[in-house]
Length: 184
Picture 1 (cartoon, rainbow, N blue to C red):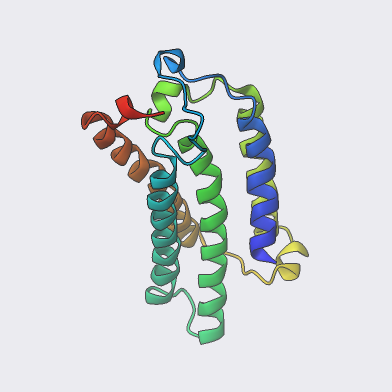
Picture 2 (cartoon, rainbow, N blue to C red):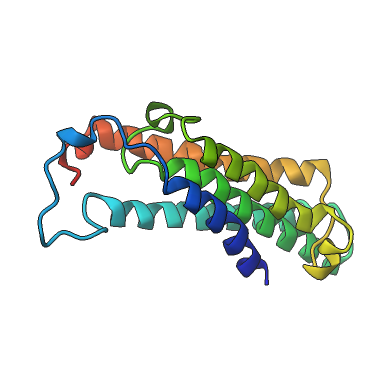
């Protein structure tokens, strides 16, 4: 149920909003795609792979942190907190990662962080829907999640923000190596 909710909330609104994203600067300077090319050409497949691995590592890292530094003594409460933190981290990573996917190689600061008003509204709305499952009484029992402390929320936020930092580092290295020049 957690994965379905995350997919519904974090994929629907931001994906629709990304569909109206303005074109990247310099897109017309790239060579046209060949007839035999596909969506995964131009570095897209590699980006999907490494970013998926990063996301997995971050979610498991936050889960592990919750197990190693529990705020409760009862094992079932420790596990419930760890699952809730993993759920919140995965959802928040998906929302923040939407900024990364505006471009395969260009920095989010180059492509324009706030150019797309539809996108700018979709992220907070999706965030509110995602967080409502944890903080609103009734929803949290329906989703079998626990209330998180401020320290736990900080771990979730820091873990989630790391996806932007890691992907920006990889993109900077790719640009330095000239990989963006070979794109599509």
